[in-house]
Image (cartoon, rainbow, N blue to C red; front, side, top):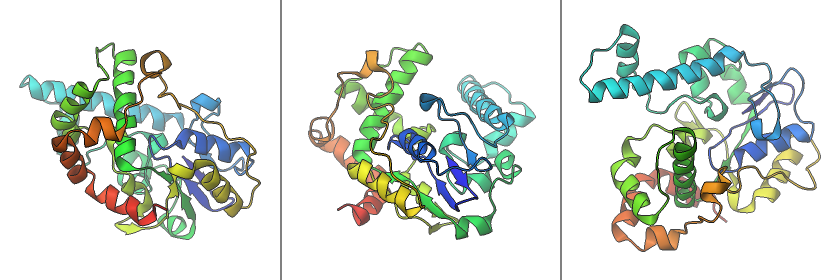
Length: 272
């Protein structure tokens, strides 16, 4: 995530659309001033810039408390006052600063207190982010999610068409992971569309177009982080296709068409 007050633009990192590569590319081409605001881009060894480390720690604590609430709910245990307050909070998605939407900077209490951007600035600035075919993005998100759970949570999360179908029908609708957050959220602010998406299918061209638009020279070669899912040992040879994993099962296809209806409709408006 980048908020450039110097050049009046933001980069919104939509998960599983090459967003790490986009932020790194914008920073590599010199479009970020020392007073601008950037999230950490670990793969490119680019540090957090002008955001208190406490904000990142708040994200971790928030995710941990949500896990505790979920376990207590399953086991019929009592909640603390803090847990009760969060349980009443209607927000679905786990907070993850690098992948915030514009609304998140105002709706999440400990982000709004940072005053990193005003509503007037949001309406004045240009905003950029990539959008991907929603079903292909979901497939990529599923593979990444399973690989992450296997690596970091030491869970046995297989990546097969059978596990994909089970996850889709039993877990997708209730999942809070931002991997499954609608892409449309990133291009709207207070219920109104504020940005036109860059298209993932033509990534390098669109990234160059964006960098030119903000007044800088595009890169001759773009970095591509997490191209293999980020977990090469687990996911290197797993490349599920829509045809095989979705279209081959009418129940799954219909379910995903309904679940991602708004994203699909939004994507179709810009697909070339």
